[in-house]
Length: 219
Image 1 (cartoon, rainbow, N blue to C red):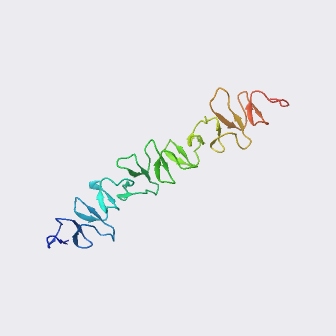
Image 2: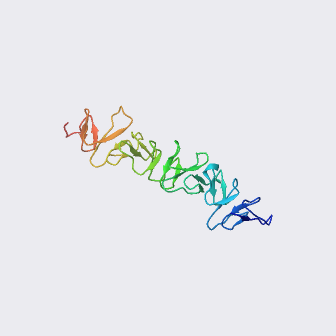
Image 3: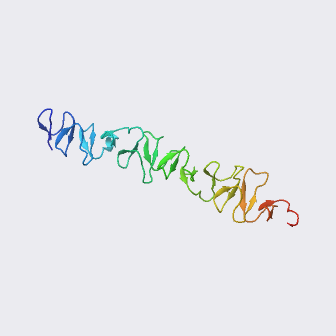
C-alpha cells in the first residue's frame, strides 16, 4: 500500500515523518479514531492493536502504543491496552511492574470482586482470605469471618468475638442456634459446640460449657 506524504508530496510505502494510516491512505501525525487506531513508534504505522513483540500497550489518552501505561491505568495483556478499570475477573494490581490487570493478586494484597482491584483491606462485609489472596463474603469450611481483623481465621482470638461458630462460619460474641460456648482457660480462643465434652457440662442457663453445674442442675 502507498501513503500520501504532505511533507514530500510523494506517495511511498512508508512514511519518513508521521505514521502510515491505512484508513486515510496518508502519513498522519494523529491516527484515525474511527475505528480507533494507535501510533506505533517502531513501525511508524497506525495499528488497531499494539504488537506484543515490542511489549507495548494501547493508551487511549494519547492514542499511542506505549511500554509504560500512564499513572492510574493498568496494562491489560488480554487487549494490549491501558485500562483504568480491569473488570471481568481481572484485578488492578499496583505492585506489579508495570502495574497490570491480573487474575491473581500479589502476595500482600487481596482480589476485591467489588472494586476489581488488589487491595490491602477488603470492601465492607468482605473478609480477606490469605490462602488464595481473595476477598470473600463467606469464609470457607474450617475458617471463620473475624470482624475485628476483617479476615478469615482458623481461630477466634479477639475477646469480643472469641467463639468460632461453624454454623455461621464467623467469630461470634455468643454462639448461635442453641449451641454452647466452649472456652477452657488454657486456650486463647473458643468454639461453639452442640454438646460439651472433656469434663465440661452444658449449662442451659448461660449456654456455656462449665466445669460445675449451677444450683438446681446436676451434671
